[in-house]
Image (cartoon, rainbow, N blue to C red):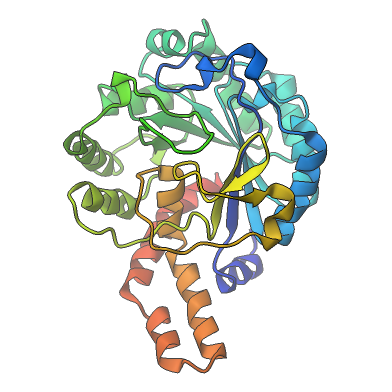
Length: 357
């Protein structure tokens, strides 16, 4: 990304991001997820015609990044078409997958369609435990083959590890991810309930942590960042903010879901996030849907809370300029020199690893 584009994004409050769950179908059997429980007759795929119109609406509404997920998005028959259109519209595109349906020709096809970042899930620190949990024999060997293939194709490869009781040795988990060929890793935080249509949660014991246990895990991740053989993308400041929340203290950085981050399900309905499930309206009407800024701290979901720390500075700049345009000089200055802006800059420097090699 060129500096001119970076400056433009900062002046408009940072990039908009939208996660789109293309399908509720999945080919894995993970215990900490509810997608495997969807009966075959209830599996759904997003309407490709509406999706195409919706992508244009997202671009008109200020979204810059689109994350395609599922279920398993590689099951979506119109994925290449969606990626191509997203690329033509100027989106930076991200795909989250379990990796089972990847092949070298498929990777080349995805890259050719405009994919920028490929996120592959890894659940445990050994091939046997990961494959058993996913219910896909040989899955780890496929991932080990696909990671260097993805890098050769020019994709930014990221491992996604959900914190669960399968990960009983964080240091060993990181070494295992490095051994698969990854250079970057993001931890996803466990979910036992969601209030939206999204099914990436479970009441299963493996993700049912007490606040004290989660607090300890976050502290261990912060300590591990300095010595990890792979870049751990979760920013220290975001982890510390969630620890404040777990300890009953008010977090410093409000979640920007509903303002800069959005979730869209396979019905192509827009919600502010996949935790609260507040439906805003159909995707095609995105530019006209309401934006929400209510200082929310309802969850500990990394894909909303981490970027909210990154983007605090840009939102402050946009707020400050808006105050100045209205002649509210002191409010504008206060927004621009807020001390949290400098903390946000430090997190942004950590987040540069998201940009790839």
